[in-house]
Image (cartoon, rainbow, N blue to C red; front, top):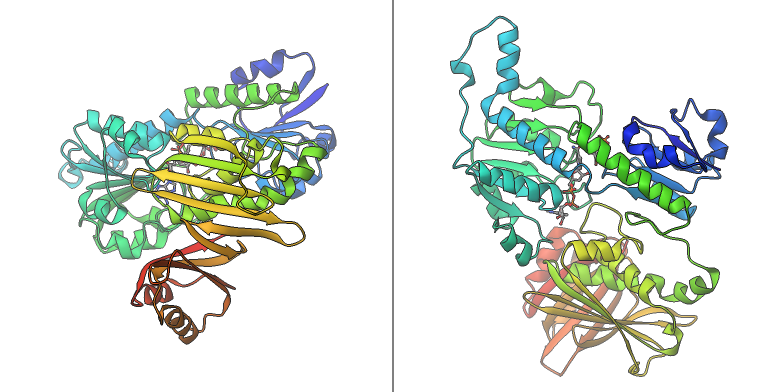
Length: 525
Ligand SMILES: NC(=O)C1=CN([C@@H]2O[C@H](COP(=O)(O)OP(=O)(O)OC[C@H]3O[C@@H](n4cnc5c(N)ncnc54)[C@H](O)[C@@H]3O)[C@@H](O)[C@H]2O)C=CC1
Ligand SMILES: O=C(O)C(=O)COP(=O)(O)O
């Protein structure tokens, strides 16, 4: 008998696969109400209200699976679950349409001042001219983050006669073409759009993506929407921009702090808002409940789940073989992702060497998880890495090769975009650790770790010295520096490691050094 705790308001109709199973007992209580039963619970189903913390997991020693009836898993401590071998699943597409439709409703309400006009009318006023709006037809909608929700929104905006421009650094030309949207860099989208809506995940890259600096570059009188996550548009900077008249108004479904107690943005007449209602429809709630109920049942019946976002358990024997290469491949993926930032068409991995004589697919998935780490909102791991690649139209290849080029083992990655190809190889040396031994055809030898800087330059006297001088003058302590070149006087590369990441100003100074053609920060945290 398995006991499943349904801790948040999840639609009961969607839970019928669980209600009908004879080996399952469903307990519909909050965590506090179920306090005395927590040590017997095998699965927990939540939305965003219940916080599944490490402390809660400690009180649930039987817990095998956490299911999030929705997309965002920020209320679940994923590393703590992974550490305990608890699978976490979600429902990635069950609420896409509802969130898109909510965004559209917010956009219409925003430009026609419907909430403000309604409040005024209810107060007994009849102020028609104060609420003159604008048409959506002919306006340019800027969509920042063109995933599931962004894509659906584009279709609806076009039906309203809007022009759609999008920014998404991970979008392939194929998908952009299929969706018939114009792709622009963010710096070009902002001054072009009349209305801008964000649909990215909240990550270190997207927190404050819209801020004081780039709000200034927008059209005066632009409208903003955030139905994704609080903080993608900096709340303080948005407030200032509205006060200054640069932004005409904003529609917000999400906040940095929820509920937003005494929030200054909510005091502004130009702001309309809803309490995180994007996914709150009968249909979305049924979809997500059905999806997670099915996943939980599948897993408890001993079968693999499809929307897991953390690690599956692997046998001790395989684990021992995989373990030395596990971090190396993640680092190879992370380096590649930071050196080839555009949309990718193909990723292929080649394994050579006797110690790699096992099913390497787990390593390929681990490499992909490193590659996607900074690109998408959900934690990507071995369980979902291939699905993530497939959804983005990326072809994945895996080969076994005989030639280790003199190393005991060699793992080589080739990443292809429409414009170029990037190659990187690494090896694991017993009792020594991981080394990257070739990068873009340059022989090199460095340990992938921490904060790194990649520099492409011409092999001529003075360049290396000048890099050292600029960094020294800025008080940057170089931990290691490795160089590689193909032939004397030709193209060359340098890879440096630091104790902390290089600030943008110092990076710019390095870029200005004569002979240097490319400088990229690489972080392996
Ligand atoms: N208000 C609500 O109730 C709901 C909010 N959401 C939130 O909406 C967001 C988007 O959801 P989906 O479209 O389903 O996710 P998705 O993963 O399909 O799309 C996210 C897109 O953002 C792009 N992206 C990642 N980093 C970026 C960056 N630095 N700049 C620009 N684009 C970037 C990705 O390439 C991807 O195409 C998520 O944060 C999710 O949590 C989702 C459902 C309901
Ligand atoms: O699915 C998501 O990411 C959401 O933001 C919806 O959250 P909710 O289930 O409505 O609390």
